[in-house]
Length: 163
Image (cartoon, rainbow, N blue to C red; front, side, top):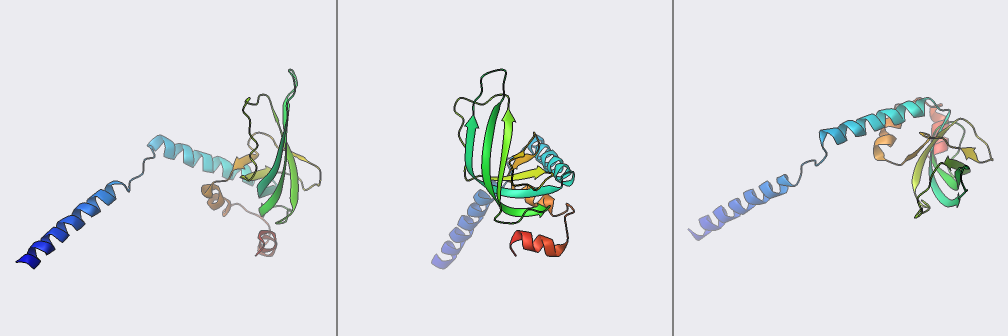
């Protein structure tokens, strides 16, 4: 009898545990969040297809040049290519780029150490100007989207990705 009671208690505990655990395993994303995420991935993919060079870089230096009005501010960045999806850039190659901004928050902080996708159309040792829509913070969804973006030959892709 004692074993039967222990078995019933164990079964009830297990059932309650599974119900509680499964209650926490649902998505908190709303339909609007999911639609925005899908739109964002599709937009990124279209932008990547329209550029000659698509690279993932790790930023190691950022400098902000604040300018008085009517001039625009400039953020100069230096990074290392972590992965090349499209174009002539090689893994490990340094890259300099800049963004021109109309406004910058007073508490601006450099995004050193961040992974960023850069989409542009030239391979040069000079700093590359990056416009709106040409720099995207790393997201795993973007990585998956790039799998279907046409690039160069498989041999070139392997050499650029360090494989």
